[in-house]
Image (cartoon, rainbow, N blue to C red; front, side, top):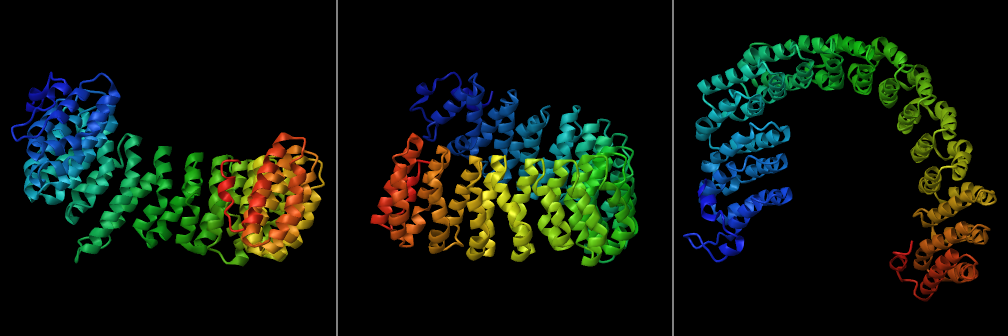
Length: 630
């Protein structure tokens, strides 16, 4: 047992009180830690582990190294949650070991944790080991860290070999040439390990080590090892090489830029056969990853490769037999179009896009719906309408709601790209869509459309739709419709709102459905509170309409009016319109407090009290008195 255990084990914390180390420091916190770590309750042990830094500070650097760390190594036979926390806390003890010359002592418990089968524990231990390795002086890297890595890499159990792979890139740049050769040999062995999980770990780490090695090593041994991984018999390994291709491309480009006279003038060119094999891989999962990383791959290979070879691979992915691959490729459409330009887009990619618009998979159509406007933006306006207009409208009328929603999310760009007159018929259809989510999304995008279309077009084409949404059967749609009127007022101004909304709102108040009338109350409240509406305009045009609704036959509408009045009192009071409150609001509220419905009476009484206070003290902030009642 460690000295820390021997000096405190078997003692109750109360018995330790007053006992001291030889240097006079109390070791009560240590006894409490050990007591907590021995409890059956997992949470108690977890809390004790989380306090390791506090204990280390109480002990001081020397006793932390000599007693606490060895004691922690004895704890590594516990629940996974405890071990995960311990692995994390060990990385936090770097500054409590007495300086960089002593941090290597943390590798002992971390090595034990790196053998644990639970993935989360190993991952935490690896992250802590990386921190320890980075903090070591160079002399200690070869003396302590490299042997640590090599022991893990040659471990009998695959878990330690998995844990070793991310550590090579930390140690490699700080070693002598002979040690670098040993590390490279060991890493190459991991890439050819008999266990697929080890090869996956090595594959995930190859990008980081590629940026650490010398250009000659990168172009030689390491690239050959990477190419072998792309031909692995396990698709779970090959799919990881796709992201490795991106990292390898970054390293190759960096090597070419840093080397004054590179042996290979275009080292990244050797990456293309690898990329091609991944895009055409027999496994759909690998092709899916290739499609998902297509844009970063293009950026690493360069414009010449994109135009000459990558376009063909992209169209192949767009026409893949698996819908998941087609969807992933379609989501890259806008980025690819931006990189290849209009001529290549029209000649080589457009035929594939036309087939995807009517694809059998709804997921593919969803992906193309999100990116089609971005792809169209690279073309001149005249061509956009002729080429992409029909495709866009087809997607807007798709049978699947999510496809329509994805198109709607790009309406502002669509109006600018295709022209408002082209998409207006589709907007009308979607405004009355059977799926409420589509109607709701159209309303959310209406302000953006308004900025594109202008007041004149909006007034003649879409005003009636905006007012019609106030009577929708779905609450969320009605709520958004009420808020939409306020946002349109902020765009077009108060005069436009008075001319276009007041007659329609007045007409809606005469509808039989009380839900429509409640929505008008919300809309009037929001219009009065709108910062683009002056208090005098609100008092002349919107307030009378709101107070008129106070005599509605449905109690829900009436107490909705009372609540709305409370919300707008402050605007009129701060503007000095006490006469409006006294002459218009007070008489209405005095009638409402005698209402037969107790809810109407309650909210009306609150509104009347605050109205009287606002009249008496117009500078009073009524928001405090209203808080808590709604």
